Image 1 (spheres, rainbow, N blue to C red):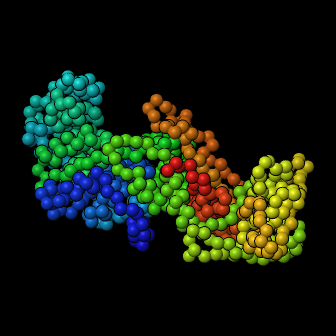
Image 2 (tube, rainbow, N blue to C red):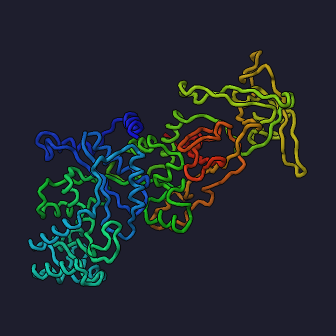
Image 3 (cartoon, rainbow, N blue to C red):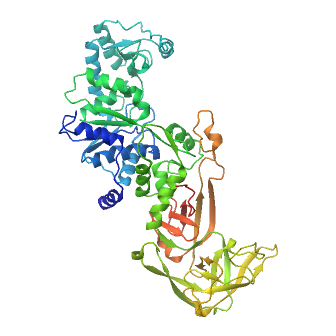
Length: 566
């Protein structure tokens, strides 16, 4: 893993953005963090699997720390136990390592700070900066006020000792869920509604995946997060743009509690939005729970485990995140650009092999029956160091059904009776002489003759070959395979729009399963992860879940044709 990580990092381009500019100012002479180590954190909530949107954030968090020779913590934000599970904790760690990042010994849980969160809340009560409120959620909403209209809080002037007693009894489980909250006392007339005495603790009788039933009150994210950042010595709390309006509350919390550390700086950036997909974990979970996909790792999902199963590489994803940049203005990135980044990487690294997805038999009638030979084909034309390999060739081959037309259309340069000579990749020139059909008129066999003097695909007399170059596999040694062709999970480019039912936007043709495909014999022992270019067909990978010895399953990662407009 260490060598893979180093390779990925060394090959990524140098980048600088407005976050880096702010940090350079902060650590420069006279800056607020002069002489300090840049320290960031990635704080995912373990209530689902990481998706490509999280990937942008973690690349910013870990990548920024790397750029400045700093540190990055991994912290599970497990302060809301309703959907959290150790399954997601393990998956998040696996995904981050797969991308080539590491947190060393700086792995934390937000729930580890519950006692400290509680004590800081008590401190705020003692300072007259927090109080226990008994408004129901409906009453709280009704009393929130409006623009120019202050909120109303009838419990705001509750005596400190009374709030201390009630808060302790909340912790002891003496009150029903939802009956009481702890609110920060800030400004009921603030134009920023996040400062209108926000709730910082609520009662929840729910089992926690690590703390068990020890706690029945839980801190709100806006209260717990700044405390955790400060306790861990975070210098720069990098988060998505929706937290910009929460920044004054972040600063208020760390400014009003007695944390003996510096005050972190929060910097916001625009979230990643990609067309033809959804980024909400709630929506992704619904797809899984309703069986509309095979699981979180379905290759059509935008999750990192799904992208990995589809054949995406760490380098392609990190290049994608780096090249889309870091901005303050939200935008929608084309999914085709993500595919473009993968195609670029696989073009350089993927071994070329031959596979036939819709096989029809090709018989070379003038090739001796029972004879076999090997021909040499290159492994990767853009990488001479990849070398060559030998594949078998005989009288009977498999070729693609659409490489033959009995009655050709104009400019058709593949196989048809009386048509031009065509090259069989790495082997010989052939000329189609006819075909065999079944009783229903379907072509079951293509007949052709070869030029024995054209081994390697070039005629001895130097004549010009007018037909196409075709891929093929030897019928005597070919291996059967299942091939899955994936398309966008959503046919609508903006399924996440507020006015749309994202389920109704699902693409009914997002998966096509082909059985009876034929691949080179050399693929029989392939193991995941393994990426290949099926010549003329696209880039494919061995499925890391369903493929087994004797049962090859390949997923199409991306087609050869690049639809992204540079």
